[in-house]
View 1 (tube, helix red, strand yellow):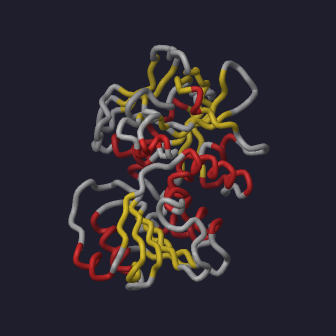
View 2 (cartoon, one colour):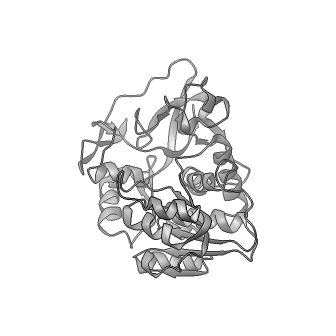
View 3 (cartoon, rainbow, N blue to C red):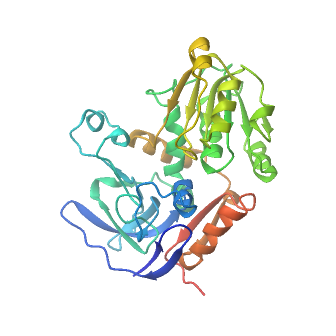
Length: 330
């Protein structure tokens, strides 16, 4: 079968790879769509983390099993099943968690093996191109879950989202869904095209840099970039007693003004991935309130290397890239 194989740094090739074999409790899924995530781009940029080439990347996907007509979204995380986090439904915090495209072959291929328990049926009427956004939307929804900030923020709340990539724009979508119309959501991104999209999706106002943000004003700041410049800006704009949730992981280490955090009683927290509940909630939200299809660009598997180059070199031209392994390349 065909797969998009990452060979290290920015080296990606479409090649013939071995057919996946399911063990007891697993199934082989025919991949219909697979989304390119920012974490896939980290590896492409040379920040591989624990990924080891050669590897099929990808963890956002929908597909079918055994030629069935039913389409499933793939929940890409598995845990040990016995620790306190797994028992609480937070596999994303399990010390032994495993993620598709990181710890095992991912979804940028015609077929992938997953645990049968990771198949999540789609709500009625939810299209494939919308359902594949469940994984990144769940990442944004997790910030609003009961384990972080309140799931129903006060109507007067000001929310700031730093970064208008897919996670940031989906955080905007989630915030508008979870709050009343009186809530404000402000967005930050250096790309003018992405700021325009944020306004179209309902942002109250947009800024080019974190330096333009109001000081000590926001109840919640979501940093969907995760570099020192953005979390420093987030701490500047959050009010005393407010929350900064860092979702992006553009930089692993850096300086933080701990004095400001202590003196202003700010909650600074990391938010990694999502729970199964967040994932299912994301599917429900996409079914009831889908995003505009113009946000998504779908290409065949053979165009995968070009899609990665475009996302890295010209981020203003495209927002979310999906790979369709069922389509024939030229």
